[in-house]
Image (cartoon, rainbow, N blue to C red):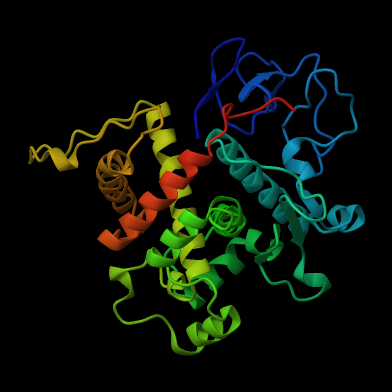
Length: 345
């Protein structure tokens, strides 16, 4: 994500800012401008307090309406439950905050984000397991998220139980949105669909049987040579979703690094050019160029994490087969890119 500054005093502010702590200016994110702007004269999203939303409505829109991101939420816990259950309310706010980041990045990449109309488009059901079992997943453009994933303890327990190196709310949203974007980027395009089947496998294979086999038998022994994660081995759709989510991880982190002017010159003990990176703020035409910046940056960030006694920030291995799949995703994203990254609405 890009860095943002107060439009009045130039102080660095987070994407979630509602006030500049330096000069006191009321702030908000304006989707039509793609920037944090002074909120004066603009109405805030009706979910400002309920969902912690700092997005602003389009100029001229009155109070009481929802912003683009909040309009994507089709189902959520009712107001009474959110008011009486602090843990649920916090999990809901975390899910909405992650969704705003997903929507921002999708629009930055030029990908279509349209509210579900009953037949087409994107919608989110943010549900609590306290009312009954919830299965995180995707179906025909509707993404279901178990809000229990907003609890750090639950999420860590699930991460360990599933043998995953990485598990976050934003990661869930990126993965499930990958299923939606498969419908947008791959399914309607015969040429893309043919290449998808060559790289990922036949999407027409029995999905339920494939998942049952994965959970009963686990991934193949040598999965790391062909897949970005163990779960990606379950079915071609899951391979795509995991790869697509990984692509979003890479692009977002590199945009952040470029926005802060981060440059990796490599350790002083070596002059290896493969350990140098200067992430560019401009989108790269070739995925190979993105990878040339990505890998040295991950080496440095992993070393920083270890110095803090933490696990690697980037605990993944990108095999040649995975890079080929990521390149395919990159090509389709660039092809689909809209003329305006953040359209007026």
